[in-house]
Image 1: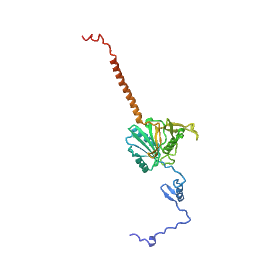
Image 2: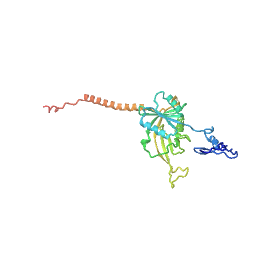
Image 3: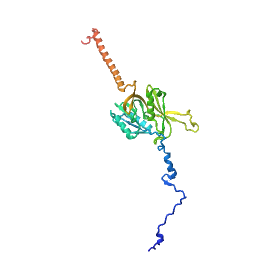
Image 4: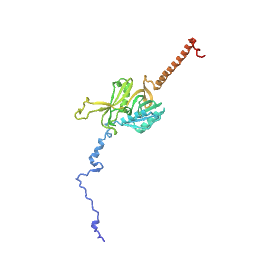
Length: 319
């Protein structure tokens, strides 16, 4: 039998009173010790709480139409890998009501602009650039498509890094080129401090206008890292550009005031649709066939008008 405890031992021990002069112990978290002073300072350092600080929250939705060609799908995936601030969505049916459908999708995804690849007749690629929901929007015909898989170039840059964007001086000539430049900067430019982007500039997007077409190239900025050839900060002599890809050419067709439609702001007078080009080629081939038929009829008429004289030795061997 155990001994009975005394009544004094069973009484609860009163907690010691905290010394008012002693500093309070900091709170412990999973990341370590946290001081209360730092907790109060955190909301002040957040740029979103400060109304004076502007933060670019541009997001681009990238999607395509159904029955797209595999080469054009690879081009779209190459652009998705180059734009860390984009959101890829499911295919959309290419109909007359695609504008309202795309605007709803863009709003649901929380994006402010869109790149839509529309394939027609399994051979013609059209690209829409749109700023949603109020516009403007541009429709391009995409030519000279070369994907990264086809080119197999030696250039390589960090995925998700922010690009430098260069434009030729032709973009400052006319009003429609200035508008296209601004839209390209908003869509292809990666926002600063985006959560999926890297804080480096190791590649360049080049947009140049030749023959009223916009040509796109992507180059890696190669810098020597050897101790003997290490470059001084700001020195551009030892920098080289190595092409990465992809390559494509944009032929502007129309600029609309709204998103995927609306009143026409600009129409390219030099644009010829691919259907017209194919029709002209067929007419040329049909012209060759017509020439052959005419030549045969002329030959028959010539033979009828100029018959050959009968040969006196023709029936010699029939006996």
